[in-house]
Image 1 (cartoon, rainbow, N blue to C red):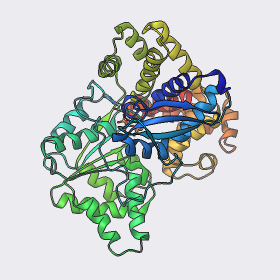
Image 2: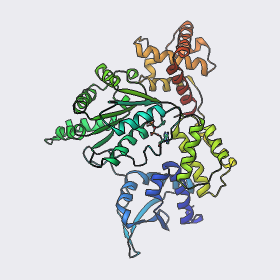
Image 3: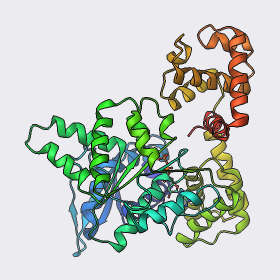
Image 4: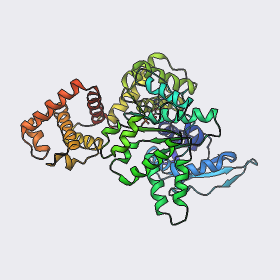
Amino acid sequence: MTASITKEELWNQIQARFFQKLGTVSFSAYIEPLTPIELTAASLRLSVPVDEASEIINRWNSAYSMDFVQFALEITGGTFIKPDLQISTTLTESVVAPSPTITTEQSVPFSRESDLDPDFTFEKFVTGSGNENAYAVARAVAEQPGKVYNPYLIYGGVGLGKTHLMQSIGNSYAKTNPQARIKYATAEDFLNDFTDSLRASVDGATAAFKKTYRSVDILLIDDIQFWSGKEKVQEEFFNTFNALTKNGKQIVMTSDRIPTDIPDLQTRLTSRFEAGILMDIQKPDLPTRVAILKNLSSADNLEIPNEVLELIAENIDSNVRSLEGAFHKFEAKIRYMNKPATKETAQQILDDLNIDRGQKVTVDRIQETVATYFMQTVADLKSSSRKKDLVNARHVAMYLTRTMTDESLPDIGRAFGGRDHSSVLHATNKITEKAEIDPRTKELLLDLANEIKNGK
Ligand SMILES: Nc1ncnc2c1ncn2[C@@H]1O[C@H](COP(=O)(O)OP(=O)(O)OP(=O)(O)O)[C@@H](O)[C@H]1O
């Protein structure tokens, strides 16, 4: 198979796939600088510029080699080709780099994911009706951390810009206060660092953990719903929280829902969070989606007619991450596959996405999606338990099954642990009424239905 493809052709196609997968920033940092040197039966030798070599090789070792092999398999129709990275020296000869292997996680204490993404800035954040309040508060927090809104919690659905906005606070403050100590961690990092510190036999591990999280000016914690039901880490965060706020330090958090809707989150935490300010981010409206696409195209120096951007924005309305994904697919087509920047090319992307995304709506799929959202199991939904959180989740799942499938009431009852058809009717009416008076319930039902139909 490899005989029929040149090294340039193979590398071009692999680049196009990396571009779609990674987006502009990582692509230009780690993929674009490489040049193909030689294609053999089992590997593609790539030259890496010497001044960026260590960073690029590390990244390939930990993340990209597997993708490369997978892409090459797809492109060649089944030939196994490994990447063979070689550092090109200034003397134009190549030095063999340690061959890329898949390594396990690096063991730098407490530094995972701690860096702010330089791309997550206020300047690159497009505002519109769905996020302007959250944005205004973020700006105020970045101006005077620890003073005005503390803690600040941003909540909302998947891929709507919570992390971007939170990190913008850190990036903006760091720009004017280069000495400031700013720590970004996901809730999962916090938990891992905490458990590592307990497990480590070295003296001072716990002290190092405390120093990392308690001696900062701004602490940014992403996705706190991850702590649901995890008592110990909640306790530790409670102490961290108190230590920081006592000293006037700023805490910013994100979550996929308001804290009181996170099952098994201690009340002493939710009440502290609610004593600060909570802001939600909603899905972007059409003008905001078009503006986001315009920003992306001008950042990448692309001239794309408005009507093309509008077509993409009209069709991708679930979240910003999906919108960016569609844009990068489109960009890859026009950059690497010589397609014109027209509505026809955009329509091809949209058609492909619909094929990929179209999920068959089944009772199983509804139950899995709803159970995951409410942090329950499908078995819980079918059980006879009447715990409050669970009953609500079950009602939502029954409602969605009733409205999204053709199943009869008795069949739905059977699928939910052998319940009577009147229970299904009761659940459906209850959720319908709730959605009529509570916009948050309505929004949640729309989000879940969207996820059931399209995947995340
Ligand atoms: N208003 C916006 N303007 C520009 N880019 C945005 C905006 N909102 C989101 N994005 C981009 O969309 C992508 C997803 O955003 P982000 O990761 O912040 O979402 P999230 O809400 O934190 O998602 P998750 O719930 O999965 O953690 C990022 O690349 C981000 O830069």
